[in-house]
Length: 362
Image (cartoon, rainbow, N blue to C red; front, top):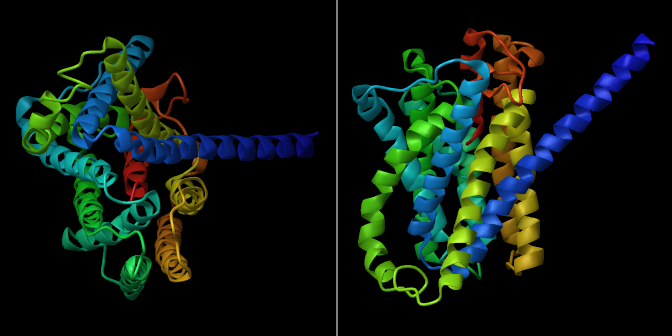
C-alpha cells in the first residue's frame, strides 16, 4: 500500500510539473508569436508595450488585493525615497529591455529574435562578474565563448538578417543583463520586502511606464496621434478590436510572469532553466514551420553551440546549488503571498525562492 501511494505521488508530481511547463510554454511562446503577428499590422510596439505594462499593473494590484483579503496581511508599500532610489534603476532597465525587444519585431524574424535574445545569459554573467555576484571561473569563460560563438554563427550570412532589428534585440539582451542583475540586488535587500514577484511587478510597472514614455513620445507619439487606428479613429468597432488585441497581449505578458513564478514555486529554478532551453528549440521549429523563417545548417550549428553554452551554465548552477545544500523542494514550493494557489510557509524561506525565480529568467 505504501509503495502504491509513493508511485501515485510520483506520477502526480510528474503530471503537475509537465502541466506547469506546458502552461509556461503557452504563455512564453504564445506572446512571442502574438507580438510578432500584431506588429505586422500595428506598427507601434512602444505603445503596445506601455499598454501591456498598464494591464500587468492592473492584474498585479488585483492579485495583491485578493491575497490581502484572504490572508488579512497588509501588502508592502515602499516609501517614495526607497521607491525612487532602489526601484527606479531596475524599472528603467526592465522597460528598455521589454520595449526594445518588442520594437525589434518590426524588422526581424522570430527565429533571429529567439536566438539573439538567448544571449542575455552572456550579459547576465558579465554583469554578475562586474557586480561580484559571481566569481570568475574557467567554466564561465567557456560559457561566454560558446554563447558568443553560437550567436555569431547563427547570424553569419543569414538570408533574413536585418541589422536594425538585430541591434535592437541585442541592445535589449545587453540591458537585460543589467536588468536581472539589478533585480537580484533589489531582491536581496530584505528590508524592502519585495521578495514576492507579484509585489515586485506591482512596484515596477508605474516607473517602467514613465521610463518608456519619452521614447514613445519621440518615435511614435506623432504617428500615433494621426493614426486612424487610435486617436483619429473613424470606426469605433476597429478601435475596440485594436484595444482588445492589445489588452490580450497584456494578459499574456502577466500570465508569462505568473506562470514562471508558479513553475519555480512548485518545482525549482533549475526546472525553469531546463524548460527554457527546450522552449527556445520549440520556438525555432515553430518559426520555421509556421512563419517560413529560413534557417541554414550553419545557423542551426550556431544555435546548437549557443544552447551548449546555456546548458553548461544551467549545469554549473545545478552543481553550485547542490553544493550549497538548498532547501528541499517541498519547502520551496509554497508562498503565503499566493495563498489562492500555493500552501503557506515560513517568511524567511521566501527570500531564496524569489531570488531563484529572478535568476532563472536569464
